[in-house]
Image 1: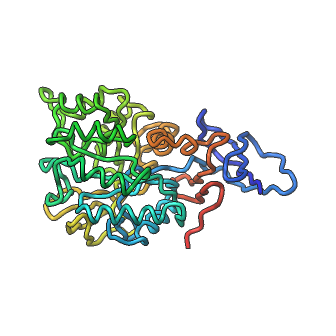
Image 2 (image 1 turned 135 degrees about the vertical axis):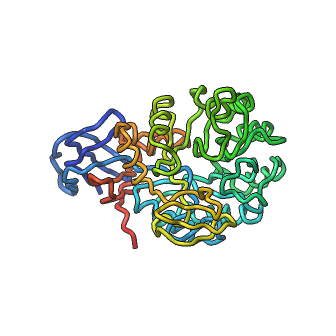
Length: 382
């Protein structure tokens, strides 16, 4: 079965096509063009009515959604996040842990493994372990009682349990054993991200030299910039191969900081994320997350002491916010789709190009999701 999507403003890898169309065949993009196509017998055509068509977005940092926390030990939590992601224009995601006991982390890994390949919505691209090897001084909402110094023996257990699904680990490299952990993870082909870290500029540069290539929720949970103590953020800015996560929710980053990150790193060096907890899709209320009581008010999630506790933003909202801050649409889409795909080594996703998976999102003028396509099949939330 072949299907056309036509009459769309389409963001391709070569630019924006104002009256674009594409043909889907066997779950992949088979043809890209302009204007209405000549439809052959047996082909169907979907009129996009001039709306925006972008490649499916990829969230490399999400903890929960719709009332479900992926650390809660249930299969349903993984499925619910998959569904909510698809409904909000995210077609692939990394199931992300918070610092916990080893037993709880292994249980989460097992549930992700059981769900991968039979997801009801967005595809599981892997697992992102955020902790537990994080610095207490920069813990943010991470629960201090679970934070540990790096342990290669324990990490081996996690890698053995997760196998190829473990794509990213966030660490504080300045901790005792941290540099050895960076080297160990890179030897296993795992992306090493730095955050919840008090690393100096020199310590961060050493971690990057050893193979760290990414920064989790840049500016949040880390030593701030000082003109005599530049720290890990400036070190990351100076390294062309180090990419940065950005939570663009009007809370975690000032608009000027988002623009500064973009000016320094460009769209190829920035990754939009949600870092969402289970309040995504539900809104204000009281929640339990990471062993903490969390209050969400006016969309802002906080611990009792005012510490930010993840976010409630969705990927389509993050995309909209980024464009509203003055970043070009093409760059914002790249940061939400192509750059995370490149980071994860999945070149068949995150772009509108011939041969790529037909993971697509149709958005209206307010960036609300009209339709989501997963390998060419329209997602319909049950």
